[in-house]
Length: 77
Image (tube, rainbow, N blue to C red; front, top):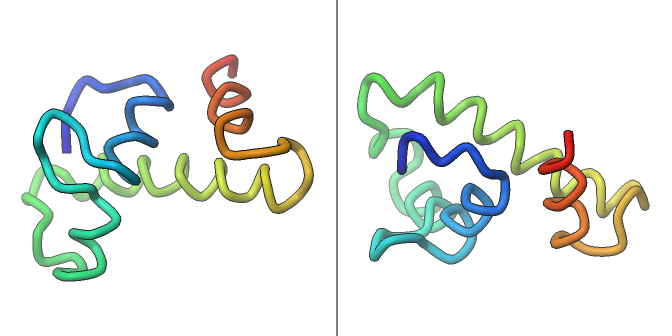
């Protein structure tokens, strides 16, 4: 995972599409579970998971019409 990527959009892109030639995080999780995390990334990964879940929750709860709007809302926060 790219450290220093503090934008929600960048995180969402890395998670769902991949970023900077790296595999998407969603695929790494599906294939390897927690085994691919580097020791120092566990807390960082945990925070990122909360953001991704919040994007999905905002759409499911009707707070945003789509994931892009949910990302924009979180960027504003």
